[in-house]
Amino acid sequence: MYSLNVPLPSEITTLAADLATELPLAEERGRGEHTLVAKRLGSGDHAAYARLEAQARDSLHGQPTFEAAVTGIEQFETAATGPSPVVYLAVESPGLLALHERLCERFDAVAGVEGGDYVPHVTIARGGDADAARRLVEREIEPVRWSVEALAFFDADLGQEVSRVSLPA
Image 1 (cartoon, one colour):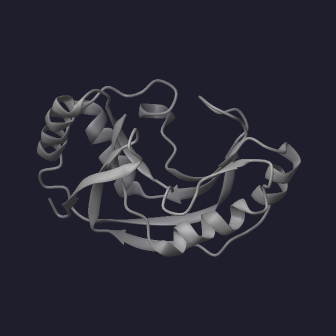
Image 2 (cartoon, one colour; image 1 turned 120 degrees about the vertical axis):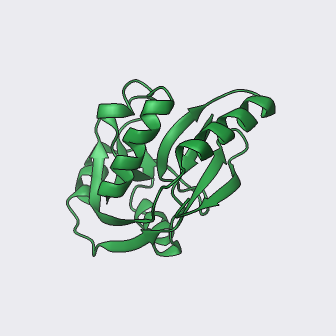
Image 3 (cartoon, one colour; image 1 turned 30 degrees about the vertical axis):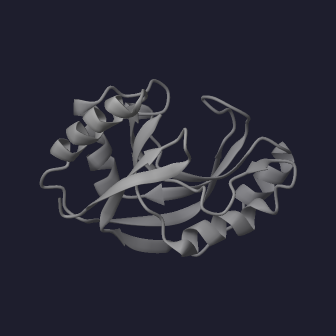
């Protein structure tokens, strides 16, 4: 699966990794594996990726920088796919929501997780003890704010960034 992601400040990835230690039975994301998906673009071979990236870059024309903030810890009690619960850092960003909507006009929304169901988030951990997840969700954190000045094309099969586009695009 290919996606367009928001690069994360190290403060956020460190926070997510530190919080995951409180969910010892859950599947945590390792350092460098935390993502904030703006829009899934599709799947396929390398030739498909080149086409998807070109279409996405075209859709990003004129995209300004925007602000984002991690504001709390929340959970999906039942995940759309994979183990539940999913404990995550909630992201507030009107600019990201507008970008997602714009990209949904060009690329089909993935049912259950995009379009009207899109919830910007950074996964801390999946599965494990539901009581431990509830306790972590009750914790308050200091908001972490940042300016999104680039977007990253990400190949989930390889687990790595393929390229970036600077904003404004």
